[in-house]
Amino acid sequence: MVTIKLICGIVLLFLGYIYLYKPKLVMKINFYAKEFLFNDSYVLLRRKKIGVIFILLALIAFYMVWTLLIK
Image (cartoon, rainbow, N blue to C red; front, top):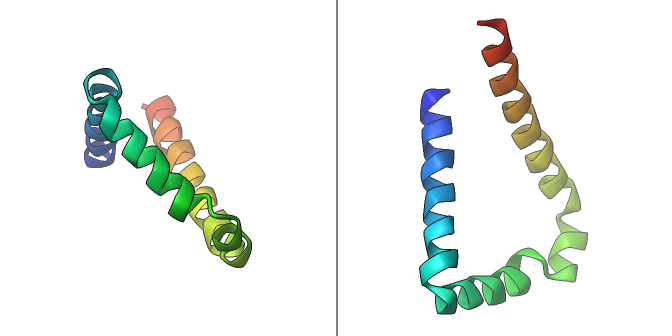
Protein backbone atom coordinates (compact mmCIF):
# COMPACT_ATOMS: atom_id res chain seq x y z
CA MET A 1 0.00 0.00 0.00
CA VAL A 2 2.85 2.31 0.73
CA THR A 3 4.14 1.86 -2.81
CA ILE A 4 0.74 2.73 -4.31
CA LYS A 5 0.59 5.87 -2.20
CA LEU A 6 4.16 6.70 -3.15
CA ILE A 7 3.45 6.21 -6.85
CA CYS A 8 0.29 8.33 -6.62
CA GLY A 9 2.26 11.04 -4.84
CA ILE A 10 5.00 11.00 -7.48
CA VAL A 11 2.46 11.16 -10.30
CA LEU A 12 0.62 14.07 -8.66
CA LEU A 13 3.89 15.90 -8.01
CA PHE A 14 4.90 15.41 -11.64
CA LEU A 15 1.52 16.68 -12.85
CA GLY A 16 1.77 19.71 -10.58
CA TYR A 17 5.22 20.50 -11.94
CA ILE A 18 3.99 20.17 -15.51
CA TYR A 19 1.00 22.45 -14.87
CA LEU A 20 3.20 25.09 -13.27
CA TYR A 21 6.23 25.09 -15.56
CA LYS A 22 5.38 23.35 -18.86
CA PRO A 23 2.13 24.81 -20.26
CA LYS A 24 2.83 23.56 -23.80
CA LEU A 25 3.05 20.00 -22.52
CA VAL A 26 -0.29 20.50 -20.74
CA MET A 27 -1.85 21.50 -24.05
CA LYS A 28 -0.45 18.37 -25.73
CA ILE A 29 -1.73 16.15 -22.93
CA ASN A 30 -5.13 17.83 -23.19
CA PHE A 31 -5.24 17.21 -26.96
CA TYR A 32 -4.36 13.54 -26.63
CA ALA A 33 -6.79 13.08 -23.75
CA LYS A 34 -9.60 14.50 -25.86
CA GLU A 35 -8.56 12.45 -28.87
CA PHE A 36 -8.11 9.06 -27.20
CA LEU A 37 -9.56 8.97 -23.68
CA PHE A 38 -12.65 11.11 -24.04
CA ASN A 39 -13.53 10.22 -27.61
CA ASP A 40 -17.29 9.58 -27.75
CA SER A 41 -17.01 6.41 -29.80
CA TYR A 42 -14.32 5.05 -27.47
CA VAL A 43 -16.37 5.79 -24.37
CA LEU A 44 -19.55 4.33 -25.81
CA LEU A 45 -17.90 1.15 -27.05
CA ARG A 46 -15.79 0.50 -23.96
CA ARG A 47 -18.02 1.88 -21.23
CA LYS A 48 -18.15 -1.36 -19.24
CA LYS A 49 -14.36 -1.70 -19.12
CA ILE A 50 -13.94 1.94 -18.13
CA GLY A 51 -16.64 1.57 -15.46
CA VAL A 52 -14.91 -1.49 -13.97
CA ILE A 53 -11.59 0.36 -13.88
CA PHE A 54 -13.17 3.30 -12.04
CA ILE A 55 -14.86 0.99 -9.56
CA LEU A 56 -11.58 -0.84 -8.90
CA LEU A 57 -9.76 2.46 -8.35
CA ALA A 58 -12.49 3.54 -5.94
CA LEU A 59 -12.21 0.26 -4.04
CA ILE A 60 -8.46 0.71 -3.76
CA ALA A 61 -8.96 4.23 -2.41
CA PHE A 62 -11.56 3.04 0.11
CA TYR A 63 -9.26 0.22 1.21
CA MET A 64 -6.41 2.67 1.76
CA VAL A 65 -8.61 4.84 3.97
CA TRP A 66 -10.00 1.82 5.81
CA THR A 67 -6.53 0.51 6.64
CA LEU A 68 -5.53 3.90 8.00
CA LEU A 69 -8.63 4.11 10.19
CA ILE A 70 -8.09 0.65 11.65
CA LYS A 71 -4.54 1.42 12.87
